[in-house]
Length: 177
Image 1: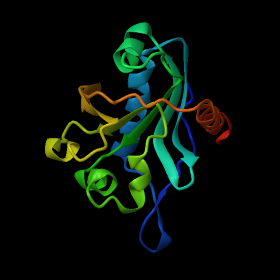
Image 2: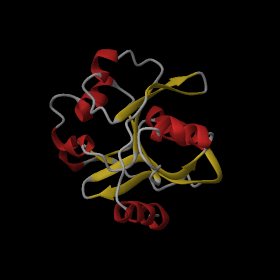
Image 3: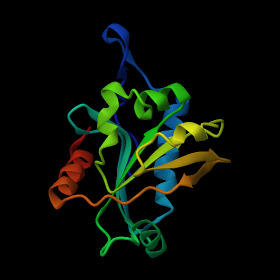
Image 4: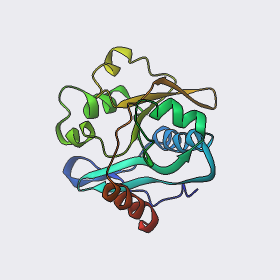
């Protein structure tokens, strides 16, 4: 699994590039580690800060093959399990969460449209934002820090994607440096 990717800073006021906080990066890495425990021996391929659509850079992304129990957990309502493309958005602060998933999401409206089969928002253990969680699109699940790992508070809804979308995302992971 490839977790080391070039850090793309966010663009702040007056075009300054802002680097993600240590907590943000820790949440990204924990997301991929959490997922690694749920895949088969075929493993997963993932990375951080992957651009997958114009103006959309996901915090963490992985293509994987789930173990049977997790395939049943996430894809039981579908006739056949689709290829698994897992998208993670790390939110270190409530302000960051609300700027992306709140009522006035602004430039983050693309987060309201599914781009993978499963989507999770990863939040710190200190996050007591339950009222805010209700504003997220329902296909996004919630993972919260617990101990040295993550716990799933809300399960995401599976969103099948086309083969063309799947292969495009795979190419994004394979060829992005």
